[in-house]
Image 1 (cartoon, rainbow, N blue to C red):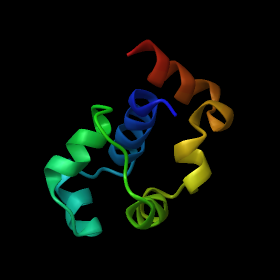
Image 2 (image 1 turned 30 degrees about the vertical axis):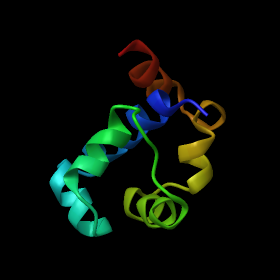
Image 3 (image 1 turned 90 degrees about the horizontal axis):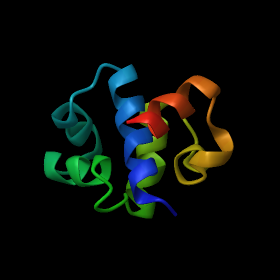
Image 4 (image 1 turned 30 degrees about the horizontal axis):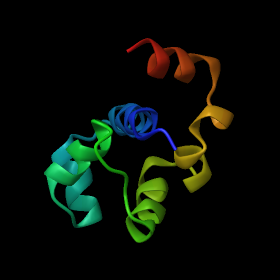
Length: 82
């Protein structure tokens, strides 16, 4: 698993929904710092949070964890060129 790519995907989907890190954290009942760690590739969400995160972002858990297999071309460019 590539934590960096997962984090970039989470950030991209969060921004598409118009959420700040703080707003997303509130929806998940976690700290903003946890969201920041995911987006920087320091860690990934635990299983229970991952399921809720996917629901909020409108994706599946597989979309998040198997990022290389499920990206559109536009998403891939966004993630791999940063």
